[in-house]
Image (cartoon, rainbow, N blue to C red; front, top):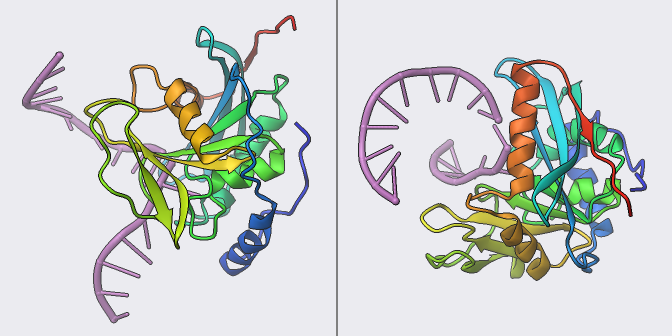
Length: 235
DNA sequence: GCGACAG
DNA sequence: ATCTTGTCGC
């Protein structure tokens, strides 16, 4: 994981939007994810009147769903939540956690949109081009795009379109619950992104890596402190 | 001006 | 995202 220092994070909303329009050209939809084994998941937690972000990343082995490694980072954010500018609030802390990772996953799933974004640069895509690793956006609700009704069976999906382009899929990961919005982040195709998310959902609406990351950051915030783990492997 | 609007 | 109690269903 070769991180790139593409830019700083302190700027006006206006500058942030301009930056997204400039960075979107670096996003690649060329699939670079082969057989899946190690999948990462990232998430952030924070309290109401506090801008302290508790970010975490977990790496799961899809063969048996065991936790391979997890790392966390606590950092204050000075950027507010604004639809379309989520990465400027959460990405700094998430990248802090990612830099501590010793294990390089085959791809990372983010809690939020990939390219299914007004300017094509949701937090999933943004993190992908900076960490230089395949990423998949998996959001619980829609930000942009239109789609037809999604079938009731697990695996059913509808194409998510915006501005005359297909930007992702609305995927039913479990029967009886709302579908999720999947879109490529970086270095992954739309079909592969959807397949990755579906393969990572085990009895629940959200992918296992995201669920574990969510539980991890919440535990970090409540029971204070950042506990990490790394179970080394033999190639 | 009004409605929409990831987390 | 967080806050917050109960309630419906497998």
